[in-house]
Length: 594
Image (cartoon, rainbow, N blue to C red):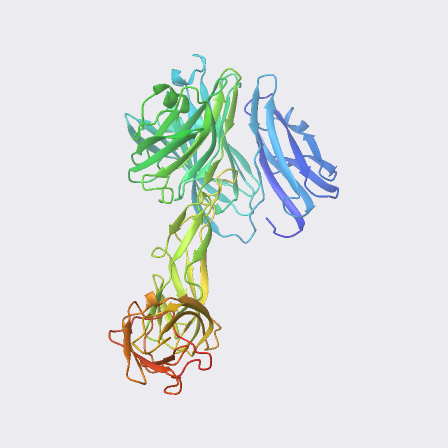
């Protein structure tokens, strides 16, 4: 969809499970000005059936009844909404219904991809389609028989190739049957004959759940998908939200309910060629419950929340879900935590047999929302090194160290190189180091059509400026920390200060003050031959910018008139690569030695 104001297009799909199905579309104006819009209805091959011109008042909503569906022999077709304005200035929703029988289903709408979009291959799973008679635990009337449906429409400008693959469980093992590919032309709509596909797969008398996976070759977001199951009376319609089978982090279920006749059905499918283990973590007011799920290759597992509650079986932590609890949320993750990469397709629906209602639940993909790099700005010497770290923050609030898993780069490898966050100084100059996260998913929703992949997107990172020495170092702030023990007869010989430094090499890098605990053991000798020692770590390396013998001065001379207060400090051990440097400052003398 265009990111700027101008002509906007939203495409939709309609279908009829039985002759009495009709429908309506609502158009809501989110702006402060009236907006004209056009709704066109077409058949399966994009032939126009009707057109509606409406003007939507500021922040108003218009409803358009799809009269063409009532007497039309077509069983599937398209809808197109056009207007001139900003993206999302008009929010479009729609529903198919037959009030006489209780039938209802949502109409999907989406913006078509750009004409220049490249062809990709993605697998979309319609998970947990109900076929035949259901297990008595679902509490449907004994005579209820379900038939699955799958409708698709190509809203792009290039043909789409669709290959259906049916997956089901038999004898505790996953089975599959691949069908012939079909081609869906631009703006063409098709209803897959799932029953015929099942017969071709020797599933004529199958009862249970199956997964219909559509392998689609087309520009991404080209194909609108709608799927679900409907009973023979057209009273119970269980919509299934297709989702892209793609590696992701943990996923959140925003709401489940077992109240007032509700129950929530969860279906999980492992698209991988190897077994996987998951944790389905059920949240409720006052606690949580851990349900381990092991899925073999291509295996499916379905359960109801009411089963978990009614069992009153403690989890691995000894937790129970109280019988009085009737709603909450949930998270699906790998056994190693929320940021473990997993490959799983999930469908969740809350249904009520007495009321003949079913509401699908959108799945939220957990992932990173921001990235931050430590030790910025940084500095190191020629031949020295500084370790940077990259952390991401997820939508859950948790932080993860992704330093080793990220891709690192330097803006000038002639000045500094970087590997796994370790910056190595090469030559004098300024440099920017970037850490790019290509592993962790972004936060987003896997709800809608065309079904977005989960994660919705990937990438992110952080960068920061730094510099490589040699440097001239200037203390720009001093804070008195205290007096060291002085030799007999001398006062104020080594008064200790904490300094803030500025590297004067054109980079303008400011470095926080360092205390004496950061200095290697060094020996100081003043010009009168009196010596003393300090211990700690001194994070610097001699690189030619000044001698490894440093000249500093105290704030008071040992004896007035006998000395200018300059002392010589030398190492008695090998210095470490530096990122900061501690110096001292007199009232009249700053630093000698450069």
